[in-house]
Amino acid sequence: MSTPSPALFLNTVNAYQRSAAIKAAVELDIFSVISQGIESSQSLAQKCQTSERGMRILCDYLVIMGFMTKETEGYRLTPDSAMFLARQSKFYLGDTVEFLLSPMITSSFNDLTSAVRTGGTVVSSEGTLSPQNPVWVQFAKAMAPMMANPAQLIAQLVSQNNIKPTKVLDISASHGLFGIAIAQHNPDAEIFGVDWASVLEVAQENARIQGVGSRYHTIAGSAFEVDYGNNYDLVLLPNFLHHFDVATCEQLLRKIKNALVTDGRVIVFDFIPNTDRITPPDAAAFSLVMLATTPSGDAYTFGEYESMFSNAGFSRCQLHPLPPTQQQVIVANK
Image (tube, rainbow, N blue to C red; front, side):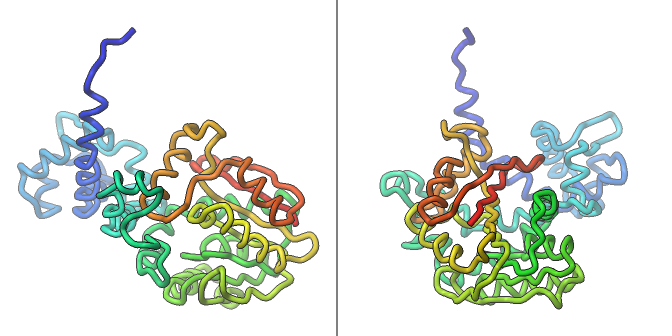
């Protein structure tokens, strides 16, 4: 039996320091500078235009956190940092701090006690779900690099399941990468993205850059209110249903069902915890984000999704892990 220790409590209470350190390192572009080899605190201070003392202390802290190693000559990146935090890497994720640590998100946790008492966000009546909320433009721009690989993996999953869509509806399209990936894998596919008009501008630009701009169409407005049209072979629901309570999700799924062809399918990409709601930890912990930022959202289990789809009139659901992501995919048949 281990000796009781306050370490977990103290590390958790001081966790804001970790967030501040990684944010500062990204803003100073330290990882990109070190990506070419090993760098001393003196050379880093010169290249990043900081004090030597400040750079030394920050880099030592980043070593303690596990983002770098420290050698006699200076600091070196770990493989993870080289892949995800050096700007030269095509997998660079540093810009995600603009959304993940934005005041709109972090302020939602300032009075978590009240959110627990009331059962939902206390920032405003709708939290991040308020119409035309500018946070979603920020999300579309900042989070696209993190979603690029999952989007391609889902497109491959669609192909492996012999789904050959020609008309695709991407709900809460955001950066548009999920629909864009489907279009890249299916030259006959026409994509229709649903989101706020300002957000869809980001998606359209990404579609143009990826060479599918002529096949990317937009439907601006609320997913609950706009007219989708019909005869969709596939509907994409990436990272959307978790924002709402079960009844609202079922309402949306009924609307989606009416827009599908007879053998149409829906793909959900989301954080899906096990029935114990504590494993896997990254997926299960996402429910706290929904508590702080939405009136009634949650991280739903596969069983809960099965029930939602069944109540909305769908025939069956299949769950697919999507490694190396922390999220999973549900394929639902009409």
